[in-house]
Amino acid sequence: MVSALAGFYPALVLSGYKPVEVLKGRMQSGAKGVKLRRILVVFQFLISAGLVLSTLIVLDQLDYMQSQNLGFAKEQVLVLDATRVPRSASHTSFKNALQSLSGVENVSFTNALPGRPGWQGQWAYPGDRKEGQQVDTEYMAIDENYIDVLDLELVAGKNFDLNHTAELREGLIVNETTVKEMGWQTPVEAIGKKIESPSGQPEGTVIGVVKDYHGLGLQENIWPKAMDFTSQRHGRYYAIRFITGQTADLVESAKESWHDVLGDYGFEYFFLDVDFDRQYRAEERLIKVFTLFAALTLMIAGIGLLGLVSFLVLSRTREIGIRKVLGADVLNIAALLSREFMILVLLANLITIPLVWYYGDQWLSNFAYHTTIDPVIFLVTLGLTLLMAVVTVSIQTIKAGLANPVEALRSE
Image 1 (cartoon, helix red, strand yellow):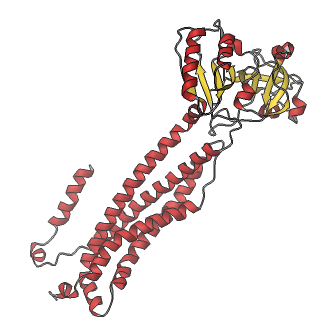
Image 2 (image 1 turned 135 degrees about the vertical axis):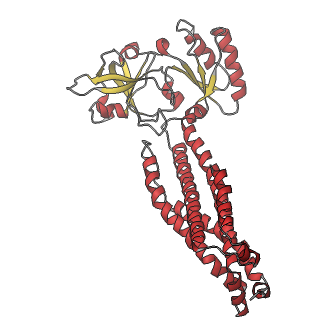
Image 3 (image 1 turned 60 degrees about the vertical axis):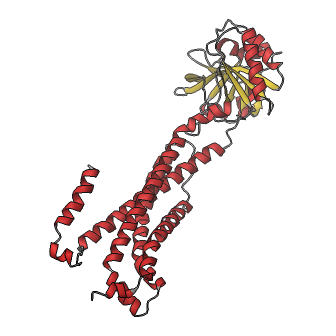
């Protein structure tokens, strides 16, 4: 459709010219044509500025999410995926084998990791519950090393201890959000409290409370979490905290131990930081798309502006010649012709700024944790589009200012 219109519109305009006037060099364009070109320039820069602003907003939000303190240490954690390994396998022996490898600091066997939640939506109640106190909880099966491997912070109580079998059987470790949702005032108050569940999971006595951490990306709120010492029955991942600089050797050694202890089940692994950041891929793709289209629309807007400048310079050739004869210099001519285009670009920005501010704020509200729109980005975008317009307009206006006025007035 665009291709057809691109051929139809010039043909329609050209067919309206009178041959005699054209041959005499008196071909003029009406005011409607100039107005249409101005409207199109404003529209092009409106879209360009909008895409630049949108790119900066998405980039700022992604940077905010990636720079936030997540409440756990995701770097230097190698994860082996044992989802396909049966529960009857020698998981304890394999965990001990991993623990003995060079460069390994600690190993945990669990069913949940940040970015890969456990069983979400499990109903739970405080032991002395009242009506309507149901809490949707993420149930997690962990071992005694989980807190150390992820570097979680205990704010009350204690961790699981292999020497206290009763606590291993009945104990639960929860996060601060669980404490609040259960109606307990402080983490210390939660210690010793009972948690019940219709399904039996999670169920037990709170022995520890960890500081809230982001089990999912910052698009989501922090879930109430209840951690049970049942990884031998429900574990799926071996999380290995290792020393920097021994990554390649560790992966190879872990693979050998895997085949020696667990057998020929497929060896699959990933790094926790890379796996967690995959939750931000949608925002990363959005940045790439916006950046590409912002660059394209800026280029198209620049071409459109160049065409409009060329047309107006041509239509005002006689005026420019007279002004030069009367003493106007190149800068005067350039300023005269540039002023109108600066106003058009400024107008485009004034239209798009409130629109982007409104819809950008709406987009950010979809994130549980988000940044705010920095007014500086509007000044940056305004400066960028004005600079581009100045450079584009200057190409033709300076050329017009340097032209010999005799050439413009020879037919008068």
